[in-house]
Length: 101
Image 1 (tube, helix red, strand yellow):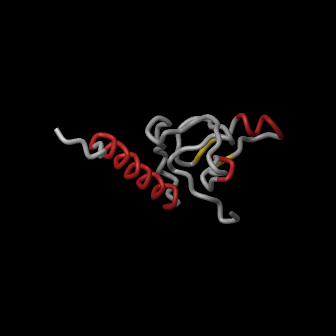
Image 2 (cartoon, one colour):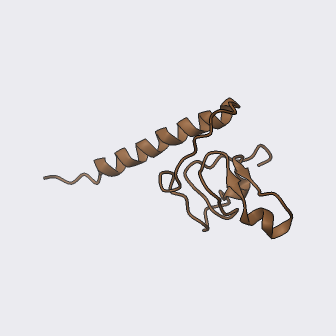
Image 3 (tube, rainbow, N blue to C red):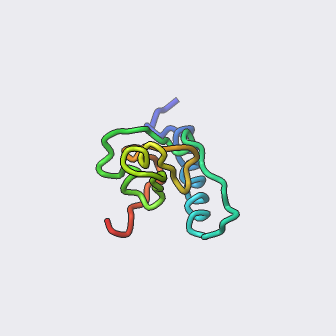
C-alpha cells in the first residue's frame, strides 16, 4: 500500500475529540445549571503540567480556583468543562483564553 502520511485513525480520534470539545464548550456557554456533564481528562488530552505557550488552565476561561486562600485554592481547582480537580499549570484541547488575554 502507498503511504501518504495521512493516518485515518489518528484523524478520526482528533475529530471526535474536537466534536466532543465543541459540545462541552456549548454546554458551558449555555448557562444551563442542569448541564453538569464534563469531559473526561483522557478525552481532551489533559496534562497535569507542561510548557504549552501560555495556554495553561489558569489562563483559560473555564478555570475555577478552589475555595480558600493561596495554595489550597489552587490544589482544589476545577474546570467548567473537564471532570475532576485540575492543576493551574495543566492544559488540554479545550483551552479558551480569558477575555483579558
